[in-house]
Image 1 (cartoon, rainbow, N blue to C red):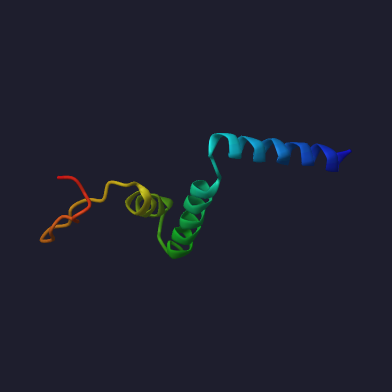
Image 2: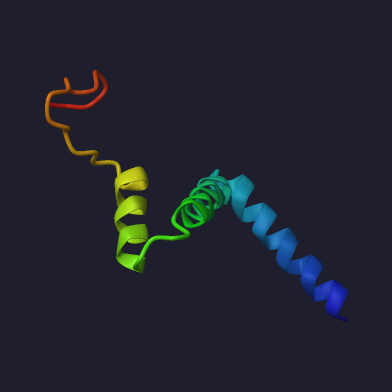
Length: 76
């Protein structure tokens, strides 16, 4: 009984992915990047530093650093 219900759920998810062209790939990629940042952040004094690091790395709006030109792909 459990195997059948799990199979039905997996089949429904597969059908939805094929029909709508959606996947878990981007979500899993972000989760992996956050796990890496968490490993890097061991030794930080607070969780706020990890949150700031994650926002800088994954937020999509990197600040312009002093004395450096803007990245050519960013809009001005």
